[in-house]
Image 1 (cartoon, rainbow, N blue to C red):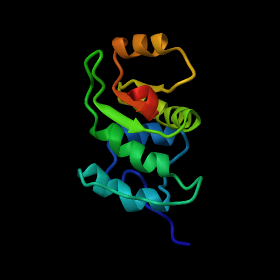
Image 2 (image 1 turned 90 degrees about the vertical axis):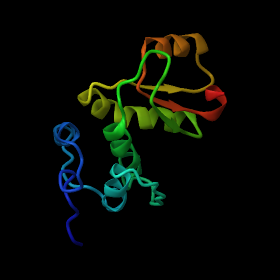
Image 3 (image 1 turned 180 degrees about the vertical axis):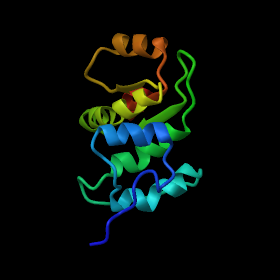
Length: 136
């Protein structure tokens, strides 16, 4: 099996490459190699891959790379997630990378305090991960 490209070779910004290296991630997975360059360039992507194949970083890295710092109450990025478990999983995976870029990530979903989530949004969130019901 041929070795995949490094994140640096895919055009990922230096701050994210360093953060990925700090998490012991240097080489991309196939889904990341197939999608990250086009997504970084602003193209729409559609990817399908098995569980554990690196899909979250395939869309998360470009989302963070292209994101600008937000104003309070106005996130600049949105990831829709069908379940609270997946929302938390996405947040957990992207949060250390977001921090390396000086960005804040938050997940919102039902079954938890809406007031706490509203307070978090008021404090300034750059990337919001939301289940559709709570987003509405």
